[in-house]
Image (cartoon, rainbow, N blue to C red; front, side, top):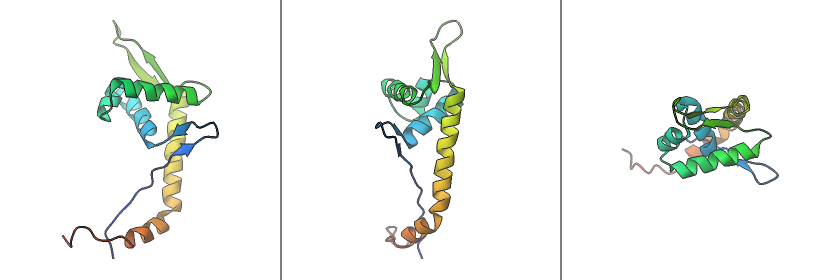
Length: 121
C-alpha cells in the first residue's frame, strides 16, 4: 500500500475564455489577509506587475470588481476584497472542497497505483 497523497487543483474555464483557478483564488485570499495587492504578490513570489495584472483580470471577469484598491498617501493605501470578491472566493473554495470530497475514493485508488519513489525510506 502506498503512502502517497494528492490534491485536486480546480480551474474553472468560463464560456467567454475567462479563467478562475488556484493561483487567482490564492491571490484573492492573500489580498483579504494582508490588505495589500503587492504584499499578496510577494507572498506568492510574483512580481508587483503580475499581481496587479491578475487583479485586473479578476475584476474584469465578473459583473463588478472583486478587489478595490486605494493609492498610498496619508492613509497608507491598500486593497480589500469587495463583497462580491469575498463571495467568489468562498464559492471557489466550496467547489474545491466538494470536488475533493466527491473524488476522494478515486484519488486514493490513483495514489495506490503510484510507484514508491522514496526507495522505501
